[in-house]
Length: 433
Image (cartoon, rainbow, N blue to C red; front, side, top):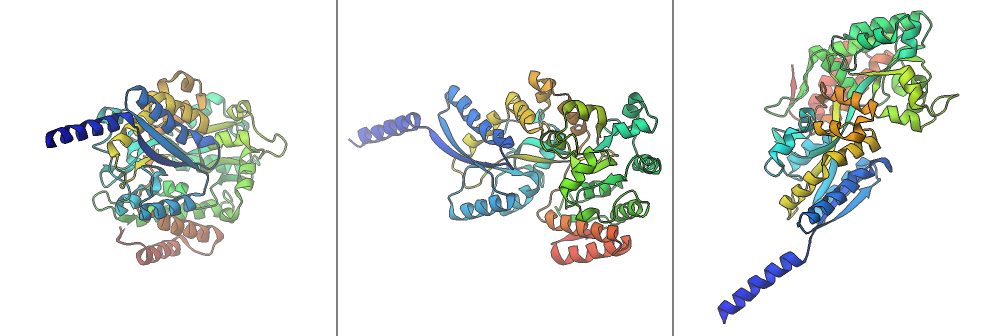
């Protein structure tokens, strides 16, 4: 009788496991309707797994909250145990989540052959202390935009411009850009040689990287303040202001004003943006008379290139598996399906974010996107944005220092002292070199 009951239980368990799907929950985020493919691709992934005989259902929530609120909700749900299985995030928060044990490493869950197809920089963005914590789906690529129409007025042909400012920035020095900006200003062709972002961000650290700066010690994970490179960064910004190439109140400008100056050709170089702004200028009427710009106008008048070095940073967004999940292997299968080349290609085309896999470039629809093909050339020479659990604090300190330098409230040397003192007080285990 006992043997019969045992066999019956095994039979019932087998039937129940095959008759009912496993339900997973996921949450993704986007600033608007454009990145909805972050969520849609997870749903398609589950559909494809069912077609392969894997009975899984997924409930995906697409959040339009700001990241601060999105992360507060995640922290609360994680604490109460009501958290999802899959959580999409930017690379900057990965070290913090990894240190807190809120997400799990994917190295033993994701196919090694699949990972070989990813751009190394995309995986590096999602790696902390040697372990991969998220599967990237897109890249925000920092770059330089320049006005080809201004350079033509300076006497350069299109062929000379392309050779002088190649998309991968090979052979280009920062000093050549300064020289071009000086001449454009002297000829009365622009109001400013350079404009940068008016808020903390990757741009300021790329200048440090151009001077050979380091940011995080790979072995210990400690934050590095590279004093030599950082001081050169500060002196560079002071030089631009003193020579009339950059507004001294740059950090107080609005984004709308900055974009207006860029699209109207009032600056030669826009060094504070990312590749996705090419689409933004087609969607938002920043230009006083033309309004939204056409693709034709942009190709005729705007150029794109990596930061000299090259030192362009990329920030990734990707899928993590939450440590409280009971279905980590199944969640990993969903992630693998969600990064299929054709799904990523559609995501890139929809969002104008950069591809994370090399095979995306072979997609027939992606090949038609001339601009995104150029972006992929920058990705090939790009670096991951520095990752550290407290990098946001350092980010703010650098921005405050730059603001003080440009307004004349701080000398470069005083700014360096300010950063070191505050970092030691506010950030754990800082290496000053």
